Length: 195
Image (cartoon, rainbow, N blue to C red; front, side):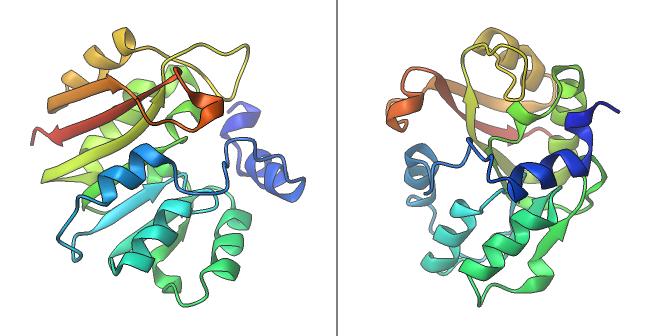
């Protein structure tokens, strides 16, 4: 296991406030998608939730079946301190690849780019396993390369075959509403489970 795949690596990033992926708010592409949802009873998972800005926004809108998952307990503690009335039993500390459950919607925001590229097929398979037959994977991925990592970059050309093998209606398009530092380097994804 390389250092990035260890809980201690991510815990240390939070303890040292080295959280460059956190833009301090829900990102516009995901906010715009959430604003279109009408069924507030759907089950939602946010893996690699970090500070949980997406969950906070969903909770504020009245979505009650929202689950957060992060490798670092510090991330969940920070979220709990900010959103005090969020149910503690919907906060899950653990490895994404070990998580069990079935969800109507999984939101991807900076988990994929934190995982070693050698594990991307495993990531796609795990996502398909976590999503109900009628469910969706929705979120944002990088459409650029990085030196070293994390974050690890990628491209539409890589993502399409990776996800098309497991999902139907694979939609991947450049984001038109990224935050300024990420303009021109993100794609919005929306995929229906094939099962």
